[in-house]
Amino acid sequence: MPPPDPDPADSDDAALIERSRHDPEAFAGLYDRHAAPLHRYAARRLGAGAADDIVADTFLDAFRKRHRYDLSAADARPWLYGIAANLIGKHSRAEVRMLRAYAKTGADPVLAQSHIDEADGRLASQAVRQDLAAALAALTPGDRDVLLMIAWADLSYTEVATALGIPVGTVRSRLHRARARIRAALGGHDPTSVREESLP
Image 1 (cartoon, rainbow, N blue to C red):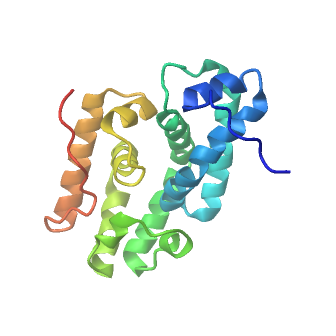
Image 2 (image 1 turned 90 degrees about the vertical axis):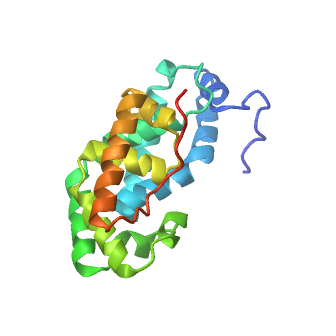
């Protein structure tokens, strides 16, 4: 049976979540909107197998917490990525092991299993990718979360702050520190460069 036509009232995520509070099946619309990019992000961090679990657990947790969602936030991406970040954090040792293995062998298990995005296209060589993996592994989990949410998930500074429950100033300082370490590790090259946002 094909899914029902979207309700015109569900023009944004908040409307969908609000409707799901009395019509739980409406929550599937949120999954349809955000599961694929969230899966790509989680797969880049942990591999495709773990990403399946991260996405499933993210939406299960979000569904359970939907009654507490702030309906003034039209876009649920920061909320969903915040939930995913907590789940990914429980796998941080596995992520660091994977990055270190890639840095040593040059065989990227994630890229072999997932889509290669534009950021990867900017990397000039296998050696740079290996050095980048080593540099990412050396970052603190907090710095790595901020950098990768901006570079790979394409969240804004404000969205990352919301996702991680930290001030925007902390996002800026973590991003600055992470990018400085990446540049130092890559001899001045920064394949994670992102647009700079002006201060609000």
